[in-house]
Amino acid sequence: MGRRVRVRAPATVSNLNCGFDVLGFALNEPYDIVEVELTRSRSVEIEAITGCETLSTDPGKNVVGAVLTALSSAAGRESGFRVRIEKGIKPGSGIGSSAASSAAAALAGNLLLDNIFSVSELVRFAMAGERLASGTAHADNVAPALYGGITLVRSYEPLDIVQLHVPGALFCVIIHPEMEIRTSVARSLLDPHVPLATAVRQWGNVGGLVAGFYREDYNLISRSLEDFVAEPKRAALIPGFRELKESAIKSGALGAGISGSGPSVFALCRGAAAAGAVLKSMQEVMMTAGLEFKAYLSPVSLRGAETC
Amino acid sequence: MGRRVRVRAPATVSNLNCGFDVLGFALNEPYDIVEVELTRSRSVEIEAITGCETLSTDPGKNVVGAVLTALSSAAGRESGFRVRIEKGIKPGSGIGSSAASSAAAALAGNLLLDNIFSVSELVRFAMAGERLASGTAHADNVAPALYGGITLVRSYEPLDIVQLHVPGALFCVIIHPEMEIRTSVARSLLDPHVPLATAVRQWGNVGGLVAGFYREDYNLISRSLEDFVAEPKRAALIPGFRELKESAIKSGALGAGISGSGPSVFALCRGAAAAGAVLKSMQEVMMTAGLEFKAYLSPVSLRGAETC
Image 1: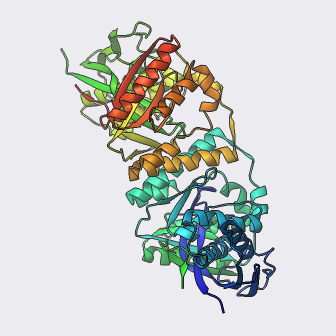
Image 2 (image 1 turned 45 degrees about the vertical axis):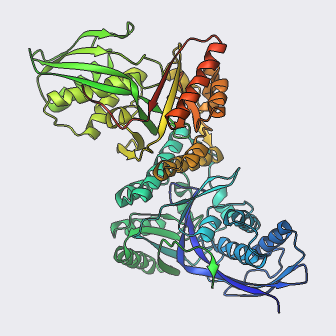
């Protein structure tokens, strides 16, 4: 049996209201585990996927296959990989399911290839997984899934990821309604152009949010959590979104919004106790409406992908 | 003779490439001085303006008149003001000439009215001057002119000004070509809509720039000083702009761009020595091209409007 590593990568929240396509952060849970074993087959073999019945074990159709193929090709190695995937994050949930598997695969593959790539290079390989999953090579989930904490994709060309300061008391509540939204559908709802005045409001808030993180100014963070670009178009996709958001803010959340392209809804909170109250109020909204859902409460986590 | 105060307010650079309409910072020089005396006339009288022959002494047509009228009306006082203005900043230069006079007038008036307004309220009164000068009530020059340092206009409604951290070694070179660009003309060149992908690049850079200020990461500041919105449209208004910018960056500037709506060109530098080299190279571009100009070198200043 060849060398083997087991890597855990967390769910992530991207967009953060104003930070469409550029901001994201890592959660403690849920997470995916990818176990990779070095083989002499020169190919990627996905032996098993647990926790999800809809994903393909064909390496050409699975993000893990795409990432490991890109990685070994760039490394110029003739080795192959045998893979087992434990999905803790449901695909299509809006909390970085494909990004977590991609990030875990990139880190695992790199460890087996003697760590020849830097973490910032791994972001590029993990983006190959995102391209397969959604048609576009986004970095706003894979970056926090690899680095942990809060990340900013300052630029795609060249790729420039900035790790931002994480205030200590930042907690996140996730409500994941039992439905799926395809990223491509959520994206098709957006106008290809933004009024200049709207764009100015959005980047004023991005500046305020980043300053709020560094100053640990929760009031400024709260004021900056506005989205004038994606949320107005996408909110209607998620049954109960307005009620969930209102309820979260009424119970003390700093802000709330659509996680990624949804359907998960996130609420940022100051402190675990506040997050507990927000979780309870959001759960009640879902139960009153008779909607099926999963819920998570997690600190904004400094831990990215890591062996386990 | 009534009580009298004399207030100095600095020139300011707004936009900072990516931070169109939201970011600005204060210089040490040039500056305007506004001297205000309390009278019993119930009106504003502009006794004299030195340093500029084109500005009106009609209080209805001068930003200082507009600001003081708004201020005393909001205060519910029946007092009047007699004013002397010393213009150190040329109107239409793009480095906040009307903002400096407006900020100085707001602070002076407030001092004479027993400081009843907060600095953030003074921003609103100074914006009345900006409305008279340019047709729009911008805050991105009056905010740094009043507070000093680097400011972010996170939001206009409600008005929310954030004072950002100022890295200690940040210096600025200004080249002011001897020509005037009307803000309204510069604004008419902008597309009323921005492609979403362009807006995302712009707010990625706003996030990077704010993080760079807090981390005192001059490399990140440098990478973030890009403008995909205003500069591509406005650069052609300023003879020699491309050469000035290239020369500044070649001589070590972190970045360069159009100050406000121009024609002044600014370059941000790390340290006074670097700024000196950048100043020299930009002066040479202007002299070689046979263009008339003024030049300034100043730290990004923590000092806003103050009595003198």
